[in-house]
Image 1 (cartoon, helix red, strand yellow):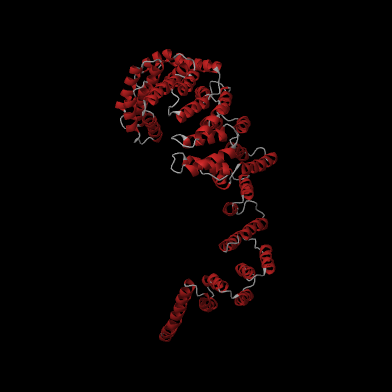
Image 2: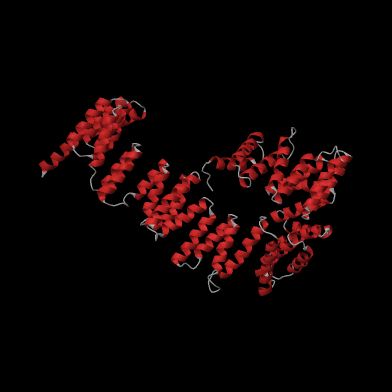
Length: 603
């Protein structure tokens, strides 16, 4: 026993210098490596590797050799390791890398090919090898290993997540799409991930069309796969092809005998994307399910609202307006005027005021609505603003100022209160009370509400820029009167009023303001081709005034959205960005420019 203890102590004492030496070599090797002295590092790492047989030194050693271009030494070392451990995948991988880096692509390709064809039927080993390959930056080879591994394992679903990650990293849109479709054939839970990841790689409609083609082929082979159907609907939505999306949604609803949940959700999406016609068709389909369906009443109300939004977008005639007003009236007749039907009453009043030219009827209804018990303070404020506008239309300015004043006082330092102050200032301007209107506008210029602050600034400049002479003052009064006419939807009379200003006051300074005023009217009336020359004239004036940057932004928007000329729109957005770098429209112009160019813009 004593002899045995002595032997152990002797071994430990004798081993201390060896451990100390290894530790010192390790420390020096790492120091040389970090300092870029790879030759010196390689000498020590070789000693440590072959002495300890530790994989921890393997990559560092060969990295040091290759970084110092010691290709022959690397070749000899790896062949020695392969002889000692034949069939080790990691060593073959390193050998292929050595061939590649020393400029021997033929032997490199042979080595990698041999590696692929000698893969074991072991998922863990395949994954480990592919991970080593990935670390070397050989992404295509890593993909090939995973795909060959699938064949070896006879499992088409193996390594799905690894392949998805690699295809996404390489931005290989086609392979990424196919791999998601492959996954969805058996893993429907992957659908949400697909809808999240694909937009981060896809850049334009051509990419979505490629996905669409692949999906349609899959659906021909597997028409009952609901994941494919849902992804097809999703990609139609990405392309803004709402009609095709609706067709697929209705087909899906019939196929799975859904209660309408999916279709109702997408109908709401159509509305939020201003695809009102498709929303109307979707809600109309849902109503066919009958009154007992849980989405019947929500669909009926949403259908009316979609028609209202369509009307406001300028795509309905008077017959549609009357029908819509009657539908709101039916709601009020059936359920009465109360907090639950307030939305219908307010929209009915809007139709009466601005589309059926009967503001007095709306005035009476809104005055009565203010007395409905239980209305929230914010809804009360909104209705008072609406009523104030009606008083302006019916030429009761003092009543309008009273309404605006109440809202401004009750909602001090809130957006609705700031809006009330701006409307009051605008009314004062229309009445020719320029000094008061300017004083109010000057206060509102500092508003945190950007749009109101910008409108207030424009109003202040409009007044201050055109009061220098008696001629300008008289011209401004006519311009203010034209704005009052336009507020009452008397577009022809408003344009006639501003067109007479140059004849009555030929030396007035309102030229640019008149151009913008007329272009706004034409755009509101959907007469886009009449607005274009006015905006171009404004932009091309030698002395660019307050409206040039906004005119550029509006004109670019017309070419992009209404006139189907994205290249012209892109040119105008670029001009705005270049000529007016400090404009409040630059940020949005840059987004539109990049979108037209085909950049992938995150939502």
